[in-house]
Image (cartoon, rainbow, N blue to C red; front, side, top):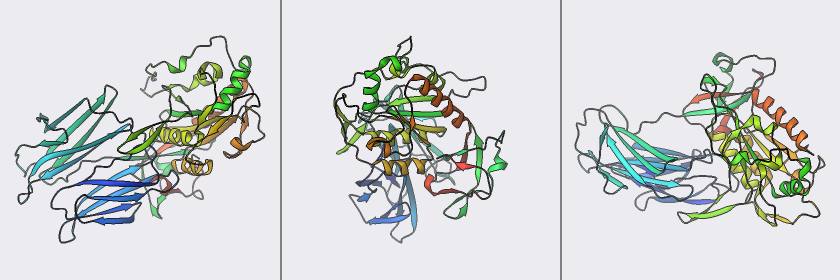
Length: 445
């Protein structure tokens, strides 16, 4: 009876107009941001402006539908700055006035790249439905005393498809939803293993105990954000950074291997800092080039020159914005994670690079802390901080490919000490607290 029409993808800040899809018996909709009331809508166009703040931070957006008597009859939630969703689909059951019988399935979708669907299919209890208008799909008459599941799949490309599933009838509610929240923690080097029993009674949310439902190791995700000045340093002295292969293996798309238990290999991606922007739903969104994932172990065996592989020229970049996008990406993998910034102060002979980031380093570091994403800063121009490096905190000097290999090995060791703790339901990560007085575990920051 209530569903979001405005779907917040990528990193979103500032004031956003939020629109909803509403069906009877909902008479009013209250919109909340992180439990604080934004406002109440009393009718069409069912829209309110919502201020998401000036810096990137995870948010919970909740719409509460009430009938004419003020009784809550529907609720919908979406999360902002918590995922790397390239696409999202929202669904709503439209009901007949008077009978309250489900009459149609209404859909809304959005993609980060403004891609239009190639196809939309829908079923009810496994039986295909006719889709003449993909935004509104009529439903046949069924026995409302029995539970039914209606599903829709929107295909944007062979690699990008999303689905929505709703249940109605019998004793079920309108939405079938099963979500988990992953929190990364670091384990003391003296501990050989970490089980579910070891993480009980030490987590809380807003002062209330929070009970974990699982612990695992899984694979690791690392994002490397490389600024243009670092590329200039490498281009100026390629012998210090290159190996014999010179192959640009990192751009090759190939499945990453799994071990005998089916666990994915640890991996990393390169994230560029040169932004590109497109308009989506009247708002401009910024994107950064990202490589296909590559095995993390290769980082310590290949040269910087082989995995950068681009010419360096004068131009603009957005280091902080790229770091925020990369952090969101690795956190959304629900795996062990880290972010590496490869920086250099602009060399005297190099073209001047202008940074046009929307966010500053401090706000992005706070965002990384909220997402439990550890940050490593590598400086190609020494450990003495300049204006760019100093903003990100302590940096490690890497002067050649051998220093990179040493730091990569330390990074792998640090990731080996992480574990993922699972909680039932969806939670804002910055609200989850760990009682360090009762455990040797630490949040991965």
